[in-house]
Amino acid sequence: MLLRDDRQAALNGVESALLESADGYTVASGRCQDPSLAALFEQAALARSESAAALAPHIRALDDLPSEPDPDRETLGQMIDGIRAYLAADTDAQLVEQRLHADMQLGEAVRAALGEELPEETRRLLEQVLSMLAQTREGLLERGGSA
Image (cartoon, rainbow, N blue to C red; front, side, top):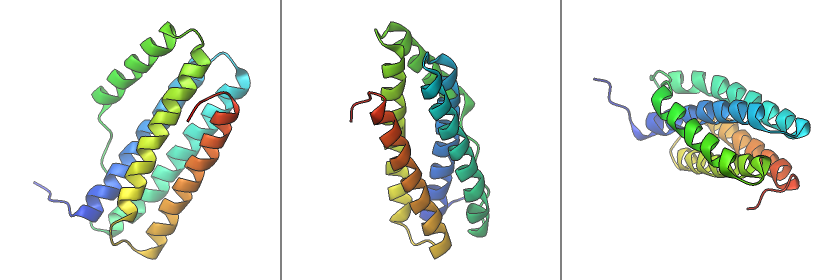
């Protein structure tokens, strides 16, 4: 059994959350009606996938292996999001709200990781993730999401 220290667990949590977020944005892009919103979702998915890939070597540098997201949990979450969007009067608005909420949780994971003693290069990468989240949030709020 592999025991992780707090730094390893925090970075693995961020990486898993990034991958789950990327999947969530990909699914949302296929469900929304507005092509410009779908493009924003696709860009956000790509940015999160790239951030997760960039984080993997930092996890390895801490003598750990990146973990894989739980596919069953992801599928269940996507099903619930899909049902909520289907039942919503404005599907796109509901998808935006779901992504804003998921990004808030991702941001919490990143801030928790920043609370650990990490190499400066890793900290810079996590700060870039927070900046990416803020940019996406701004774009989503412009499209009618609420904070």
